Image 1 (cartoon, rainbow, N blue to C red):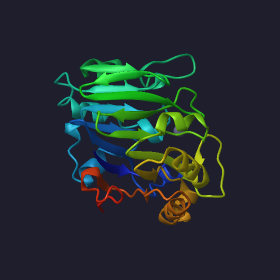
Image 2 (image 1 turned 180 degrees about the vertical axis):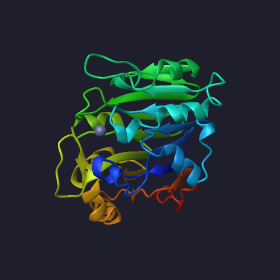
Image 3 (image 1 turned 30 degrees about the horizontal axis):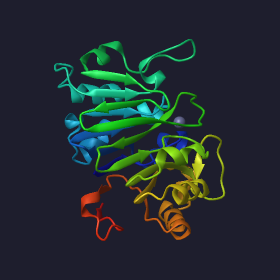
Image 4 (image 1 turned 45 degrees about the vertical axis):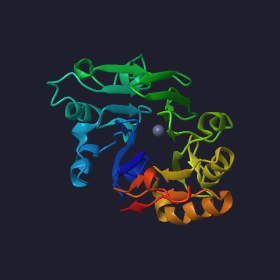
Length: 266
Ligand SMILES: [Zn+2]
């Protein structure tokens, strides 16, 4: 499994000011390339960081907040050779693909038609794509239909919490992951409803014991309190290798040595 970050900040103000990039991240697993949560600037950061976004096979979007979905349609255009080829899969929650009285549909029917397939997922839904088994996980967040993902290729298991506050149900979804990516907006002693802080992340990690934990989606106060320091604190509390993601950071689990540390390059 390989993971690469096209952005690591989240929340309104860090994104508005582009304190860091906000293009989501790429997971390569089971011979598929998956782009998760293509927020503002995904297409620009892909170009800047030398990632060929046209190779993306699956676009997965957790919920309808702009820091997670804004570049979805242009990424679909890249995946489909400019809407000229029927190719690729979109996985999204209700408001990415459908609408109701409160919310508009965020990916247009024109873009949906160019995809090979698309799926609207609710928490607990499971689908198979090629070798991959993908499960939508529950979130407790302002966006009531938000989801996270567990992706398993039979050899490795990847987890992504999406935006959520901590709740005990998360443990059932995310146990036994080789890599667990968590959105941790706030540092240790700060709280924001519907989000995790460093304390919450440590609690989830100590109960799920992933092979490696990655924190990302940092808000302003997290960036000011130094995410690396927060990651070191989590690691000392949980004894699980914990990394604070950086823009354009890559990880390759095949480069893991002794089952513990992962080589990384910035
Ligand atoms: Zn959100």
